[in-house]
Length: 142
Image 1 (tube, helix red, strand yellow):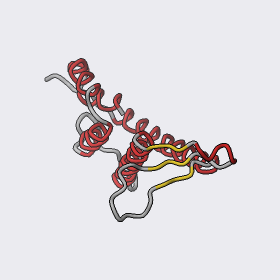
Image 2 (cartoon, helix red, strand yellow):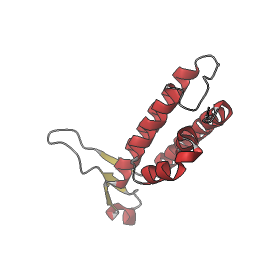
Image 3 (tube, helix red, strand yellow):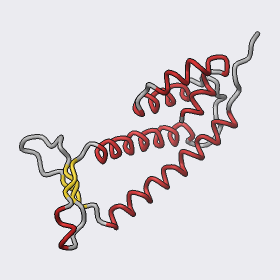
């Protein structure tokens, strides 16, 4: 994602853009990439059936994965049940009063499913990046 943003902003702005990206959240990076691509900033239009819809869907998947990552990082974990053969329990500390429990067993099946979903998203996003590299026109000086 950073590479696509850096390319779009131009080599002459590399240091400034890299500095901004280093201080940026994943949310801001995903939004910035979406804006740069949709506004054709440094990229030619990609002529393919449903490209814009496909790109928008991948962007939404990136946001969904970002939220899952944040939930995993900012949750509390109970290892107490390992001794009796049960998986680790993840508890989301942002649970609202009166809302259903937001606990999740981190079973091997669940973890394997998460890894599969991340792998599939990485493949789709890798394809998007390949298309963007081919559509990159750079900044021309007049």
